[in-house]
Length: 125
Image 1 (cartoon, rainbow, N blue to C red):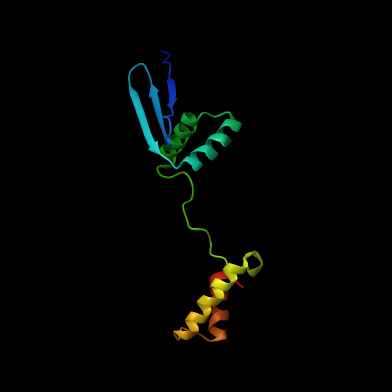
Image 2: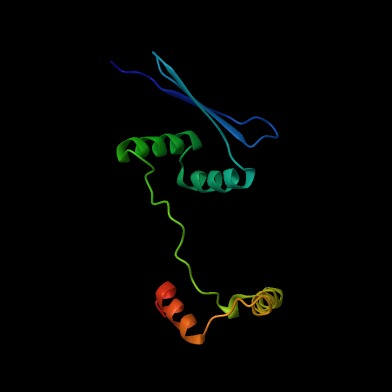
């Protein structure tokens, strides 16, 4: 027996809401989600280049959730990296220096040996 599946994407005007409706001969499943407009537009542009409708991409994600029995990608905070002064603006440098001056004034100081040990522990340097 062959079942036809019809998928529609409804994009309400002036809203960043995508409504996906999947209809089969025997049942209907709806997914409603709110996303910030910029993320939606960026994802839509990429999916369009890949030739994948938004509803299919969301369906593929949900299938992966089922197959993995959880989120199908790693969810961790990125590894901490020391701040590189070369990538900072003058304002950012001034702000970091002010934080250091505030720490000194408040008595929050440590020895150079402690700083070196912490840098090795956190960043491997």
